[in-house]
Image 1 (cartoon, rainbow, N blue to C red):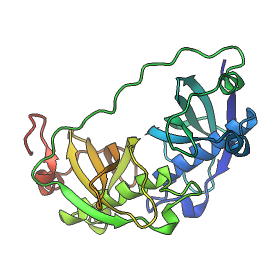
Image 2 (spheres, rainbow, N blue to C red):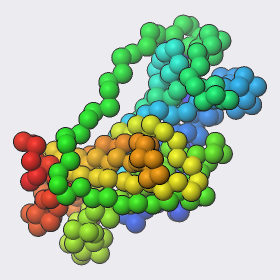
Image 3 (cartoon, one colour):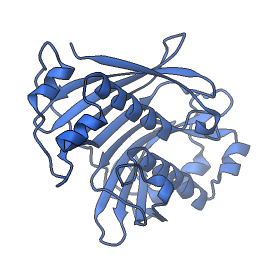
Image 4 (cartoon, helix red, strand yellow):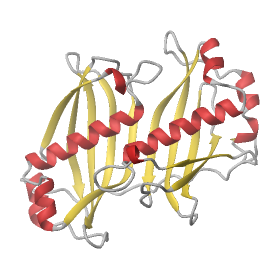
Length: 296
């Protein structure tokens, strides 16, 4: 059995979004902190990795939100390593509301083990594997490739932003959680550009909540980089839909990250799913791919 580790967080007011819920990106920050604690508890804290000349970086993240968390809620984040490959490891997470045990979210990250100097993949040493699997590690599980979205429609929405100092973490590049903040803003921007501002959605008692994200980090972005986020919708259903985000570096056109997000339309008061308004579907038709591959 793998070692498990649990850390409890109390949701702070500034971590909540305008819906009053714990911001999507903050779940990823809780995951990272809990993973660091879990590694240290197994004898591999940051100082030991520095001595080895090695580091972990996140290659891919998946998260599914089950029940929203709000200010002052306590949430227990439990994490464990699912497997080790030659240079990669998969770590799983559960978010449970303290007191009730209700599942608030579940997630997984694929971490890549790198040489700190060269930035190239490095073999995971046996002693590290043994620290997390005292009784022996299972064989590596098969990874499903990142699901490719359908080709973009004519009305691809594009927005640019520059990496700010606050976006960069101690590793010197944009923190993985901030990419969710980037695409979240782009999602509101595309709606506003189609006439559905936040004020209009609030007046209609309409909310759009993320149900799940899948992120793949492809290259590092650093302070001062200008990024372009291209986005389009697809797989529209009566009360839900998918949106793809492709993030590239403007200077050289290199891909930095890509994200697939499932959104659910809800009544803001009850948080129950509702049918997407026909006016909304029409307004974003040029930005939406139909099942047949054409724009809706």
